[in-house]
Image 1 (cartoon, rainbow, N blue to C red):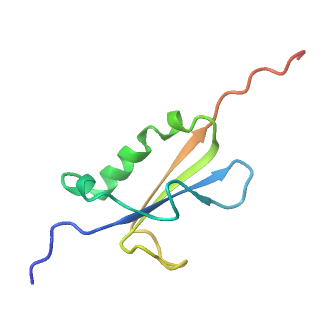
Image 2 (cartoon, rainbow, N blue to C red):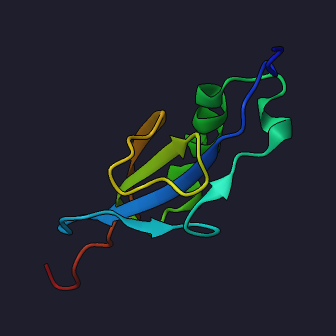
Length: 101
């Protein structure tokens, strides 16, 4: 049986603000399909790196951790480990000095 050289993946984006104990889902929905075109000439890991490359600049109003998880199924169970995960730090905007200090 011949298999395709690629397989479909699904992803979700989670955020944990500084001081918060858990990640919460953010993004276009609870879980989204990785576009097939994105995987034609690149690996899942390369797609994930590209997706997160500009996150610190684009999400400059957030301070905390951003986590991208990728799965091989569209509705993973809570205990299903991701096939790929990558976390980046969002430093947020620098706060201006407090007036009078």
